[in-house]
Length: 470
Image (cartoon, rainbow, N blue to C red; front, side, top):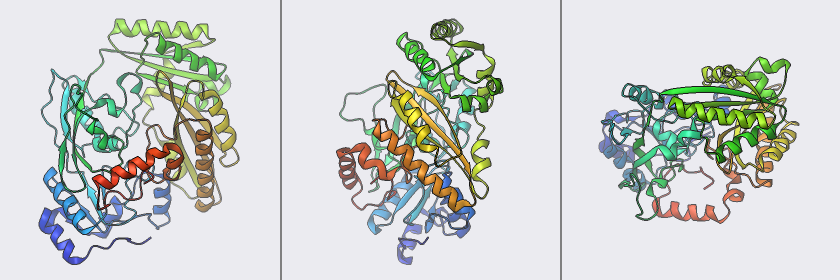
């Protein structure tokens, strides 16, 4: 691994003049620490002392004005820039694969006044999502966005990756929680969107940031639409003999107007791993969580359990769902495997329609089995037309080289089967490096349109090169 872009000393001096000496670091240890992410490939590369990427310099801005100065300087000198949140990305989107500047947004953490009436707050893009949620709960409000990385991710990172949280069935995904964005374009121009509560004023400029993976600029501030802390919460769980019964319960529940906060359907293997009751009596496990007014959620739970019973489901009471809620931030299945030589694990999420989901599950299970020793899956993030399907794999091999070979073969298998049945190749983890080569087949001519937009917004080609399939 070597720097593909070297910054001349005179240009580096100009950068220091533009943002101040204290904002610029060339410390090798700091650069290495911030030039990695939470992806399997990055972790394995670090363990082998062969990091995948390294910036030449880290800049830690304290204001939008400093971000603008960095990007203006970078466009003038043709230096790549990668914006970094808290490094929780899992597909390589934040890796500075062509060197240049790593823009560390960790100091952009200001929290504006909470508008309790209109339920909004404007925050710096670098703030930790979980820390923000803790602050808001003191005023009876919440971000409404609870990914497994809640305490590991920045708000700006969630937006740039078009993230989703476990309670998305009620509160929506990050795009539903974003009110406005402040974005610094690659030329240094600052754009403030205006769309609250809704506007018909042309294309939605927030989309320059949402899901962009940092390709079209740097998100510096986010206005979030907040939700009330629920007055009550109810938990329910149902066992099924087959996948279709669980899917049909959820599909019909949505048709009836029921909106659980959480919907998760675990296959027999993952159900056994999640709850001891399934170890001896296998089946598919439906987990439901309801948020809101007690009267409303009691009615919703009753409707869902009636539907479940009519479709062969056996109510298990609240305990399995409570158990899930208590352990939902547990990531040990992944770290226990990846953090030692020869171990590998991954969660690959795709999106499919209700009619595609049963067949896709079987195809993925069959396609992955030659490459990984363990396979399990679950459905989450449900919509009127379908849901996300997670393929979760784990294996043990002679060494990391063999583990990564199996890892690559697994990605090939999952992407091929997903595309073959017409499903979408990512639900919320993003594209980054791992999915980049399948974007032509995924988007078709749409990728050319993104390329044209990139050339217009970023004429110098500095922003996070090599990502999003561009």
